[in-house]
Amino acid sequence: MLLLAAAGLVAFVLLLYMVSPLISPKPLALPGAHVVVTGGSSGIGKCVAIECYRQGAFITLVARNEDKLLQAKKEIEKHSINDKQVVLCISVDVSQDYNQVENVIKQAQEKLGPVDMLVNCAGTSITGKFEDLEVSSFEKLMSINYLGSVYPSRAVITTMKERRVGRIVFVSSQAGQLGLFGFTAYSPSKFAIRGLAEALQMEVKPYNVYITVAYPPDTDTPGLAEENKTKPLETRLISETTGVCKPEQVAKQIVKDAIQGNFNSSIGSDGYMLSSVTCGMAPVTSITEGLQQVVTMGLFRTIALFYLGSFDNIVRRCMVQKAKPEVVDKTA
Image 1 (cartoon, rainbow, N blue to C red):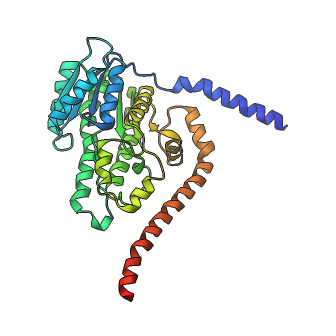
Image 2 (cartoon, rainbow, N blue to C red):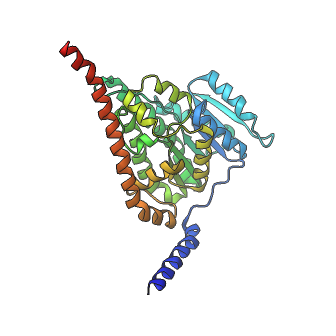
Image 3 (cartoon, rainbow, N blue to C red):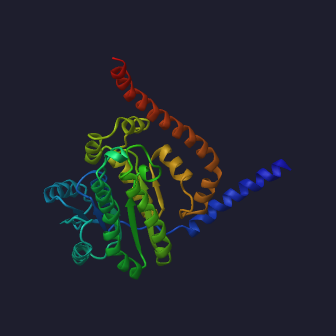
């Protein structure tokens, strides 16, 4: 009887693997495709542009700093695979004025054709304890990290639906999957992206448009270097429990998942575990993905509890350490 049950389970899993490709989206062909990358002048955004260019795409880079854009353009053009490819640079702040963002997207489409893939990489981080952060920091991060993704996506979505093809990528963060000490302004702006992505995916899936949310860990970028300058001790110690990824590695995974139409894009074993344990009601691209989440949920939740316990211990140790000088001063 036990053998029969095992054989039935194996047959069921094999059936899922066979049926899964039938319900998965058709991969997007990058050769000749028009890919728009916001925040494309450095970090993950620039590496995403390079990866797409290597696969034959036409690139529109969007960022604020014109000098950095031109420098990134030169780097990207080194990776062309044919002499027809183009890298277009547009300097604009994607978080300030929707009409301006819409106009530059129209300009890009007039030159390079309809947008096949939009990758929202524009973002920034401000760290600090809740009571120490200026109220303006919360407003700034919601503007850049959230509205800076809403505006470009809103500008391309109508054409994608009309053409019945498209990919939109939102680059969130592992801090957009769990809240951590020091990220009371940053985490909510990244959590908001997931809510947008889930709702938008339900709207556009019938039109063969697919959304991808990327949750990269700490990545070796200029943004991380700037963030580390003001990171509280507790936040830094928690961050050090995992490694720092290379932006090229993150970019390759994001592009791969976007091409396939995967809703979740995670990096490494920690990222996979975190995406599984926080999946909730998130869309799945295949039956096998859903089955894996169901099977691993209990185990991953157990492991996550140990992580949370270690993070709490770090915060407590730092609090005790900071309190020691005060005790010494009072007894002096």
